[in-house]
Length: 208
Image (cartoon, rainbow, N blue to C red; front, side, top):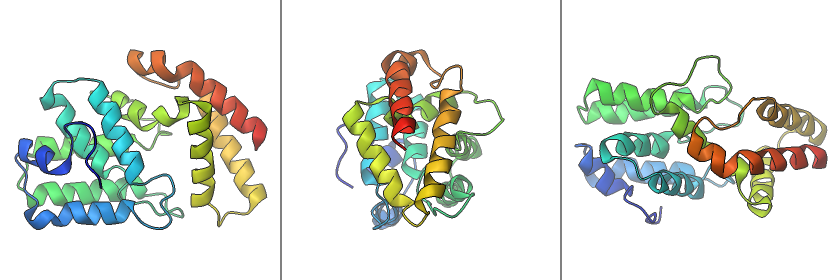
């Protein structure tokens, strides 16, 4: 993974958190996972974009660093036929943190942040989870060109799904976002992306 334009590059991040990755083993495995041939959207570029979005929030380091580590891991496991990707990614993060003798509070926080990115769950979001989820969903409110590229990439990731089935399921997912009173949880992301996201979603549904 190339260096992102912010302070959340892997080596500096884990040093600030008091963690260790001897030989960069975990970093290499993460980069390999995000660089797989089927990672058309949930890729290295997605992680870099999320980290840049987090940097733009200019949060205190003690708040932003755990969020950054959660973002590094949040799509680390991505099996298109699985319903446990977030849980499996959180498990990987916990294994790494426990191997570093991280504080249990940090391990739990990062695991919970990753699990919050399931998006369609009944549990309320707490603490920094609303912001992290907004960062993950920021793609919905980007320019039409960027959003359209995202839709193409998602279709590539699910190219094994028959066209009719894909269109039906994708419409259902996009409509679920539109049915929300608000898509984004935080004032910052509502101001930046709420209206563009609704426009992109409506247009995408019409095009399916």
